[in-house]
Structures are given as C-alpha cells and as structure tokens.
Image 1 (cartoon, one colour):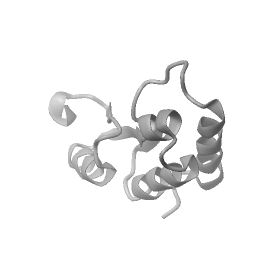
Image 2 (tube, one colour):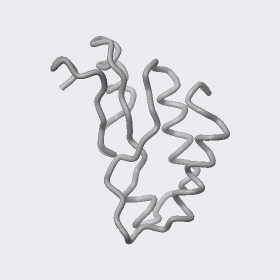
Image 3 (cartoon, one colour):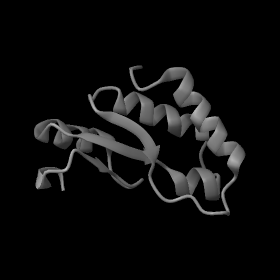
Image 4 (cartoon, helix red, strand yellow):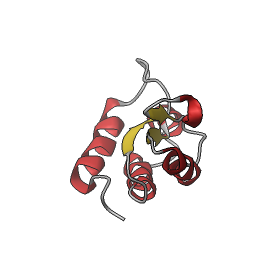
Length: 97
C-alpha cells in the first residue's frame, strides 16, 4: 500500500504503529491509526486514556502521523470512553514523546 502512490495510509488496530511509521517514512507518506476501537470502546478491557497515550507516544516519533481509530465506530460503543481518548489527544497532541 505504501508504495502505491498514496499520500497516506490508514491502519487498523492490529498493526504496530512503530512498524507502520518506519514503512511510511521510507515512502515519504503519512499514516493514521490505530486506537484500539474494539477493546476500548466495545469490550472496555483497557482504559481509553491509556490507549490514546500509546498512540500519541508511538506516533510522535514519526512525521506524518495522525491519531485515528483502528476500526469503524458503530452504535454500540461507549461514547464517554471515546470522548476521554479524544481529550487525551487534544491535551498531548502527537508531538509528545
């Protein structure tokens, strides 16, 4: 995908941001992802703030990173947990390390 001529790629919640960041850098493209939508917003098996910080910290090492969800949002999520994650990204941005 990275070598297809795209300007950026979106990755799902199963992909490692560090690996994707390295591939994106090799091709000079941006990338978006990979907040754990399933476990955080559906299963609630991990804290939304923790996973948002993971994305911010891992993504901050790579130019062109954009925080994003790793799966589609459906009607069965807990919107408060999504709001918590977004607040973390707003307060820390993707320039934090």
